[in-house]
Amino acid sequence: MRRLIVLLCLLPIWVYGDCQTRQHPDTPRVAAVTPKPQTRTAKPAPARNFNNTASMQAFYARIEMEAQDHPEVLKASEFISNPFLPADREPVLQHYVAQVRTALQIVKDTIANLHNARYIDTLFQLTFDSSTVELYYPMYTKRFMLSYADIKSPNLALKNGIKVGCSRQELLEKLQAYKLFIKESRNVVEVCDLEQNSWLRFHLSKGKVSCIQYEGYID
Image 1 (cartoon, rainbow, N blue to C red):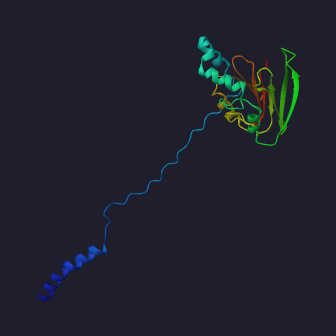
Image 2 (tube, rainbow, N blue to C red; image 1 turned 90 degrees about the vertical axis):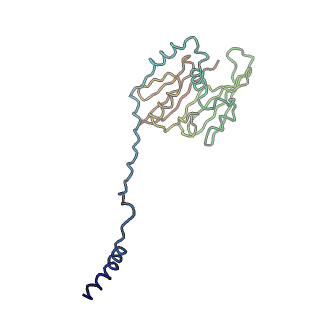
Image 3 (spheres, rainbow, N blue to C red; image 1 turned 120 degrees about the horizontal axis):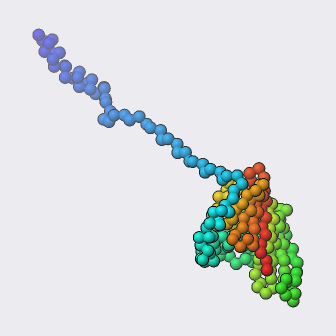
């Protein structure tokens, strides 16, 4: 009887000790969820022999009455007339020189003005890395005009980032930011505006730009 009483007295102590040794978490455990990696959808490559002539003709037909003042038309005209310098920069010789990222040579020559032989104009030729940029400087305006360029080096980029070595897809994507006529054939992408006075030609080799040629309108 005495042993039974002792066992009954010790029972609460055993129960309390067992609770202390078996500790349960206050909150249930939640399995860690690994976030799914985000996948970016690649832009589809432009179709071969890209040609936006029809869409550009439709665009200019819609805005025929306001074409001269339309902001997209002005943006395209400004780009094709001088694709190397920012719009807010007055074209001077030093600005063109600053765009070239390598050593260059400058040669100048005098020529008679086409309209008035009494005016002697100047033609500046910048050469670097087998590339050439020609600037025409008329005496009567005293403003530099881009007349010709043949770029085979990545050391002179267009102001929108296009340069020798960029991919065909990047080239077409950046050109489509302007309301310009774009036509591709036989690894050559030709670009002009509505007036078709100035041209950019991009020669492609193995899917990348290998040469940039420019022909400007000089009068």
